[in-house]
Structure formats: structure tokens, C-alpha cells
Length: 234
Image 1 (cartoon, rainbow, N blue to C red):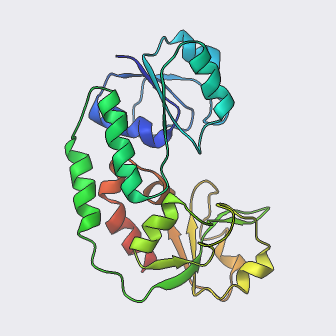
Image 2 (cartoon, one colour):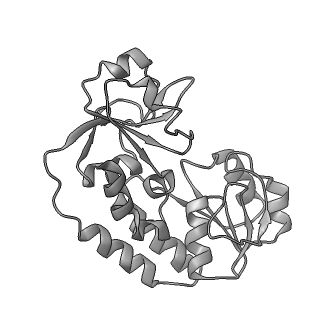
Image 3 (cartoon, rainbow, N blue to C red):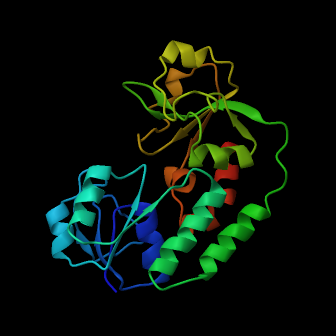
């Protein structure tokens, strides 16, 4: 079987579970190390002709990360496209199972371990209200109905903007600082927040710098994510 992945999370899931199936991946697919599949552009701007030239039996994609126009072009050329939707942890587990089944694989150990790791989390204490920027210039934060927001809620972090009308609203910095949060969570992707770039914008708040892969990726990283994120949020 020949598979092209347009999503870094799904690339890692397929590569770890079924080595050798992937013939094409995006420029942003960094895990696992040593991927030898052809690079076919970005998640938002894949080279459709290059994908088709690889003669995939299946292209795996995501409704948020990939553009419908590109997926439609692949379908029009006769390629099977599996589109995932992942906005909660439970949905991630279900969609990972669906993708791997479509690749002829099911029930990998890492998926069972990931479910067990999250199920073993102790009940969160009183939640800490937080803002979660994902970009600056302009400032954007996690809003409603996001996978990362669901993970944080399970770890006892209440997103101040969880009920916002938009999923990734643009909020002025002065409004963020007056939002009544007790914590700012700064992941290193999609914007690379660091100790020197981000915390200074929120002088009154403690800052938790987190590895964006453990907060936003759904795949084998979910096994270690509870422990890694809990440590960062302390």
C-alpha cells in the first residue's frame, strides 16, 4: 500500500505503526526522525501534482490543517482521501484508529498506552484560568472547541476563551492582560514562544512554556504527553 500524509501527527502515527507505507509527507513532518518519504510541500500548500505522481492508494488529511480545494483536486483525480476531524482527545483516539485501519493496521501498542496514560490522570484540582496564545503580531489564542484546549482541561487548566465564538480569536494584548487569567501557557508551535519571546508580554502572569508537539499533536506523542505537560504546567 502507498500512503501520502498531509498531517505531521498522522505521518508519525502511520510511520511508527506501519513502516514503509508512507511514500509522501509534508515539509512539516519532522517525526519520526529519518523519514525517507518524498516531500510534497506544506500542509496548506501541498504540490497536488507531486502527490498524484506518487500514485498513492490513500491520502490522509485533516479538516483543519488542509485546504478543501487541495483535497477536492486529489479526489477529482481519482485518489482516495481520508479526512480526519480532531477537536477532543476522545475524537483523536477514534480518528487514529480509523486512519490506521484504512492503512490495514489496527490496535498498535502505542495507541493502547496513550489511552491508558490519559485515563490514569488524577482528577484535576481547582482549575487554573489561563490564556493560551498561539501567535503574536497579531496576538491569537486558543478559543472554543480545540484539541489543545481539551488536553489542558484534563490537566486542570481552564481556558479563559473556551467559550469564545471563534476557535482561534485575535485578541489585543491589553485585553489579554486584563482577562482575569492566573497563568499564560506558551507553546512553541505554531508560533515558537521561548523564555525570551512571549513571557515579557504578560508581566503579571506566571508563564508555562510547553512543547507544542505534546499539546497539539495526536499520535505516538500522546503516550508521554500527560507527564510532559503536567511537568511544564507546574
